[in-house]
Length: 203
Ligand SMILES: N[C@@H](CCC(=O)N[C@@H](CS)C(=O)NCC(=O)O)C(=O)O
Image (cartoon, rainbow, N blue to C red):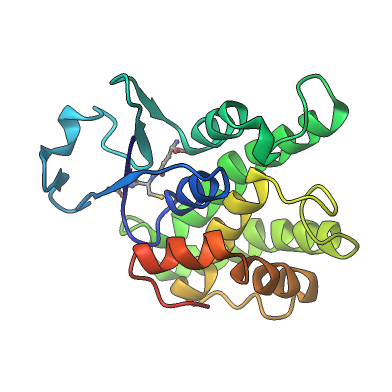
């Protein structure tokens, strides 16, 4: 299996999940500027040109981080990375994966965009992102992980995206439950190994 990634971007969650599942994977770095890898043109891998992308051993390619996370969890149920099919807890996990993907991830992406002025970013952060941080902080206030006591792939994705605010000058240190969650996650061997593999400084 190969995971196409770019350091610090949204492929980190997939790598964390692969490690939690105990799977061997080859990491292939994508240069966003040139859309190339050491293998060549990244658009030949996926016409979307986005990471993460997971090339399976049979040659199939999976894209969309939240879907890759579900595939990893479902292929290795013994790792308990998602609750069982059909359970209400399962839908809670999917609810969080969707929230992180469509609201938090894409909201944070605005903060990195060269197409958006600094002034607009500041207004967007205040008007859009703050309420999401408040919601997450309140949710985590009485929980160790998104689902309670059990780690799931939703935590990997949430951790991944919540590691971005500091990179764009957004201060989330005033959210105590988020800070505890980030510190707890940073202790997981899967997270440490993934950050090291991507050459990232540990938070
Ligand atoms: N819908 C995709 C979006 C993935 C995405 O936004 N990837 C970003 C990095 S976090 C990317 O590859 N950007 C390429 C670029 O900016 O050139 C998913 O959820 O996996």
